[in-house]
Length: 618
Image (tube, rainbow, N blue to C red; front, side, top):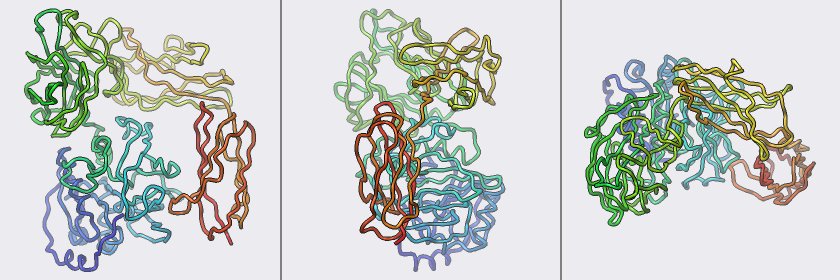
């Protein structure tokens, strides 16, 4: 939520002439309060994704129906108060109508503040009227960066949300005054990501409004901190730790109501050295089956000694092979693929996707991977490798990180990898796998998004002392697969044995050829978790107590924060035996108001946290 002087800008924006616009994917707010860097960066992202966009002024919003001209609207970071002054009651209703009738709204930082019913900003409370979200946006979060500083901050992504399926589970994104989202009674929302540095509270959320969809981002995934491809220099001195645009790609698919896609492509197989004259050298790629923008896909070959590229090929120079479960295999014979050391860089629309190195690690001097160090493959080829063999990925999954590189095996260019040890398979797209203790045992539940030739599932339970198959599709009808099904399915199984020690449940799928692939493992413990049994009194005058239950010996850290997220003090940071624990706190010197606390527990086996708020009354 960035503040600028808006008094004279309002006059300028409302003096502008109304411009007739054509049907466009996204209207981008361009008026008082708007942060130009945020607008520019998002426009460059839209260009990369291939989404049409047009800037729209407050005058257009206030006087024109958005429905029919745009599919949705984007409000960038900036100053939400500027938006509030610029958009009148008619404009607010036009936005609501657009979303309610099947459109969408994307709000980043100030754009999300603006769409909430209530705002808390630096301790003061404000009422806002767009009301797409019946709840609070509370910021800035001083524990991350006091206003008006900015920094990179870590987020945890909820992998149970389909939007995050292609996420690694965590990320580092630019923080610049964004809020925590808190729904009021009756408001539903899905938490996509949480602030690691602030009670793991919601940082990015999604929800529906009428027939439309809404996406809020407290941080700034549109800004590319160490790259110029967003056409801004803002925060370029910070380390991006990887682009946030791939996540935004899928999130925008969701909010637009499109099938969830992704910009992920990967290098799947290649051959560069063998016992003969190195004939049959090639590279195989994996791309989404519906992908057709081949001219903008490029593979660049690197010399590992100089760090310089020596050949480059566009996707149009690759030959399509087979397809499976929404993916297509592309391959190209490449005579003279360098033996050692070397590298392969894959980029799409100048966005680097992969930079792999073989027989050593090196940094690129120029080309699409300039300034970056390759990720080394831990397998290699040499003169002992038979002809017509290759290095290839094996395993089960939907994205590159699901697979591993294996020793050279018979080449399979243009088709799914197959070697004597472990085939590559993409049979089931698993969304969730969870275990919950119930009265009669442990209920296991999993949800698939799609299945391909899926005969059924196997459930196993593991502990440090044993591995046991507890159910299979052969003897449990509820574990039978759906064959080939693009709609997905929900499954349940009740494990009626409860163990006093932690166990791991493993879910595997079996295809019609008898191939078994491990889908996911989850940790489960029947023991009572670390918890806060109470904080009393609350409200309190000057003295209060925190009462904890500790399942096993471990370390407790209890920290107190003010309403803006600034750390006040650590109340305890000590080892405690199992059982009950009491922490006394005397609030001498603190003013009346709301305070937050967060307790961390670490036993070596368990790592848990609880948090809450309390009211000090003088």
